[in-house]
Length: 57
Image (cartoon, rainbow, N blue to C red):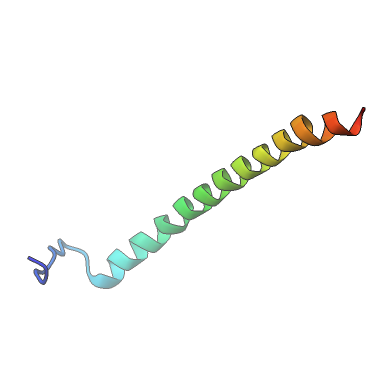
């Protein structure tokens, strides 16, 4: 059901929130790092494969 309650287990709301916040940012940092590495690799590939060959006639 849309409005059904989720099982809480033995954790209170504050304990569950602390557990999520301890592990939550790690995934965001990994995703940002991987994305930055991909963008940097594409930029370097474009630079070395397009700009450098055209600079030397």
